[in-house]
Image (tube, rainbow, N blue to C red; front, side, top):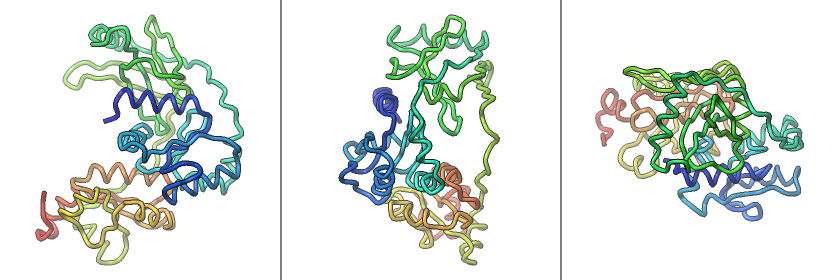
Length: 311
């Protein structure tokens, strides 16, 4: 889980540097092919930009993925906005959009208009009153590039903007501010109590990840009609694996992004949750036929091949 301290550190780096790359290695000594490609592209377009070596800290390497909700390294941020990984950077370069993006000044956004209902205001005030750290903690709102929302209490982060809403101070980073105008926050009480956020700026939902049962996956594999990737770490794959699955390690990622975007690809994990997240990320990279194996390798063992161990 991303700690408040690390979130604050990453937010500060992104806010303070107009162009920053979280990568393996440094600008002058990249330590993986994806990072080297991003550096090569940026070096052609910019004299100066910042890089952060995620290999210097396992916490940072995992934390930046959670911060951006993106599963791979490297990661490019421009003017506080998450742009994407190597494949997206390469695509933007080929279309000419990257040069245009890098040339835009990082002017601070205007403060957004945010509507908070009385029920939500009362919930926020109650939470602030109960805060362990008292006045040191403020309310943050983060809206990522996929319009996923995060409301949390933490010390004020560098570069955030203060939005006053009916006596309540809401702190928001510049990238989120550009997505927040007209946002409405409500609080729903009852059995499923929680905050409800409506954003008029959110685009129509993209194509969805398709679900495969283990039996359907077997049929596609037998027919050679799908490429399967296992998103689990090496120690889990050692416990139980399918010979047809490629690991989604660095070599697997390189192979994945070399495929035509129309290639049918499927993702597998233990129970189907991590693979769903990976599939959703890859869908946003332009792949059109993306599947998640429902129930994961555990369901495969139960319904297709009991010779595959369960753990």
